[in-house]
Image (spheres, rainbow over the protein chains, first blue to last red):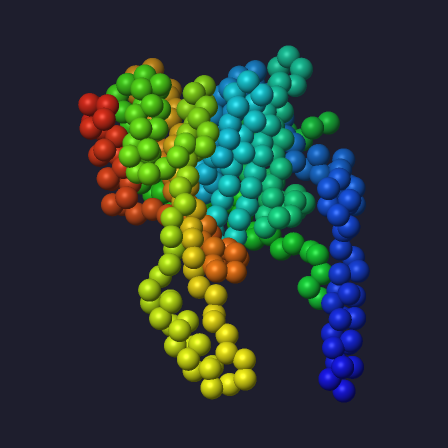
Length: 140
Length: 166
């Protein structure tokens, strides 16, 4: 009887993981729609001042409770971590887009998973836009 | 189902209610445009506090530092021993995992205020605590009025400038 219960429990665990990604899928994130993710992670601002956008990204992340881990002005990247009963990590890249715009891409991790909820990104870009006094546009 | 879905808190990227208060607590204004001086004084101060510098970016005015410290808590240890003694009467007595070590991190960001005269320094602290099983038991931001005030008092002394509220 006890043996039977164990087999049942093992089967239940196996079943609950049936939809889980393999190591290769985890590595390449090949099971997610990468175009969709890129579009919800990216916004464009009408400014040519890339450094100002980078500095505003850092202050916005600080306001949201993140501590900056690394930042590189030449490459326009910032990585920051938030610990608040959970751990969340953000990497933002700021690069020029054409002559008149700057594109910001933020990828947010929450407890070892990529966040794919568009509203979370929208909240971030609204906060960033406020500190820049600019509004964020979707990429077309 | 436990599955693989992630539940992200709805307010992950929303400003907290005390955001402004936190920003004021964590920031001071200095009447200087010499950000390099502020950065190197902050780095020296973090060293005084036992931190090792992990990253510095001069252009963006960012310093990240960390240190490992013991997280052993006598009260928690005592509770674990009590439980062990009580459970010793049973068949398989077990020692409950207790907090063992912690990593404390500090982040300093120095930026020009934008008026051509002043700079702003903002400092934040956070920590992760691991238990005897290597599991993270606490992940939190640290900070209180006393901590920030002491930090900025020491920074002011190092650069011979008075710290102002934002």
